Image (cartoon, rainbow, N blue to C red; front, side, top):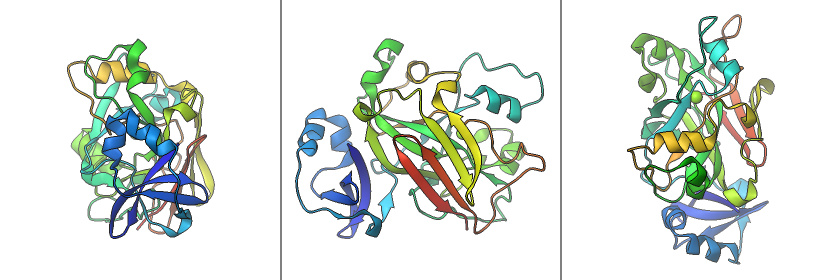
Length: 277
Ligand code: MG
């Protein structure tokens, strides 16, 4: 099942995506579905009048209010090599950081461009893991019991701010620099999340072409490490890192500019599409 959040009767509303339509679920929140598998079963059999999907405004498919996006850096070997000095070793433990809640943006919304803040916005297509069941100290072998589904994240990154402040947070947290969506695909429809192609295109040109099989730390390890001593909540997103092909490590470096259209596509999920500026 595909679950989205969209503007309906003047408020964010849960919807079941059945292309080309979306079925509104007015009296149930996404949080309730994430926390209660019975609610999910009820939705599966739900009937009603669908609205044309292309006519509605989709939001990030996350419960409100947003929490920080939990991110993994340097989780694909080729990206480690393009990101770092030659000879840099691969990380021995996952590199975690967060994107501020204010960065969360809709799957087709504009990415703000403010040259006073940054002139070096870069793209990063990533598989987003949506946590369902709350958990702490989750064992690797139990990790998938806590996964509700999957989505697409574009971890748009201000490279000038990353360099200036020597820490990921600020450069990863500008308003609107975390498009998420277009929906959550429930875990039962993604039998092998470690074998999905990921693509990022800018103005139709392929910039990233990766596969989630190439993650250095796979999803169970990420969940186990992140949840050690730290509770994961329903609706938390773990953005699992980006493959190679980002802009700033190209020769010459490439950055997003106003008018650019960035598309992030993941096999079995869909495509998010955002225009800069
Ligand atoms: Mg990233």
